[in-house]
Image 1 (spheres, helix red, strand yellow):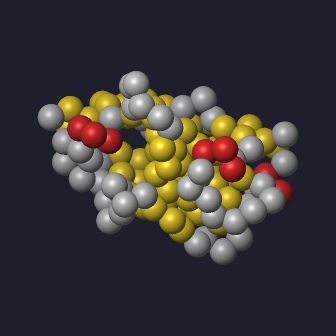
Image 2 (cartoon, one colour; image 1 turned 90 degrees about the vertical axis):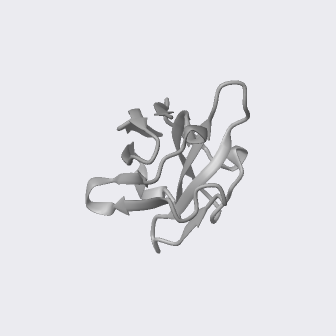
Amino acid sequence: QVQLVESGGGLVQAGGSLRLSCAASGRTFSTYVMGWFRQAAGKEREFVAAITWSDGITAYADSVKGRFTISRDSAKNTVYLRMNSLKPEDTAVYYCAARYGGGLSRTPSAYNYWGQGTLVTVSS
């Protein structure tokens, strides 16, 4: 079992920055990919970014590429999402997820464990 706890969400003005954290515990030794997804009100959950735990290979949604950076700290079992140049359309609940048994994926159903989410609100 893997437990994921997100933190760092809040209210920020457009153009501002925020860093989300995802602390992983449990059987993290088997984690292969960590991802960030987001879900805006009335919308489907969408891919934001992902990183392979072992090699640090990353993938980003086109909508956040160049603005967001995913990273991990193996010593702390923590994954981060640094968000710069935030836009109102970035407003959503952001979820951390873990995927086992495969490589990078942009599909929510490919991930096995999920955090409870942290709300990011970007005001204009």
